[in-house]
Image 1 (tube, rainbow, N blue to C red):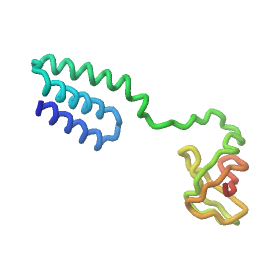
Image 2 (cartoon, helix red, strand yellow):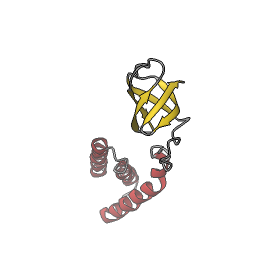
Image 3 (cartoon, rainbow, N blue to C red):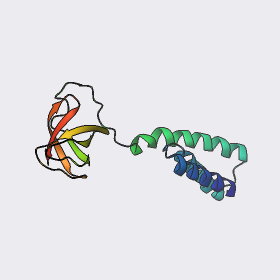
Image 4 (cartoon, helix red, strand yellow):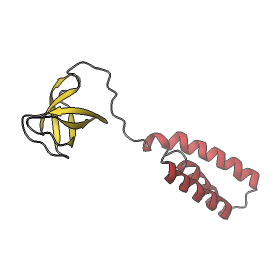
Amino acid sequence: MLLWIFIGVIFLIAEILTTSFFIVFFGLAAFTIAAVSSIWFIQLPIQIGGFAVLALLYVLVFRKFFRKKKHKPITDFSDTSLIGETGLIQEDVPSSGYGKVLVRDTYWRAVSNQNLGKGTKVKIINQQNLTLEVRVL
């Protein structure tokens, strides 16, 4: 039982270091085997087989519930594909110059007819090639 707890802790530490959200299921399987083997005597080869089956089961069943929500991919690369989207100003946008805005995990050059500070939520009102015209939400 202590062996499986130790293995589970090792897997959790590895998950923290890699943040893959894959190794955590091996840790969960190790903790499950530790709990079961503390209640019933189970031979080590059966514990190892149970660990492998549980790890695979946990990965297949639970991983889809815990994945990060992905943004829809940009498939339309026309000059109007981002109009209506929202973004976050990453670099101040002066009313007479350019700044930077983050939209769908991508940085774009931004212009506006008003001064916008970093952290301002904006809406895309026009797109000219790689430059987005934005206004405050």
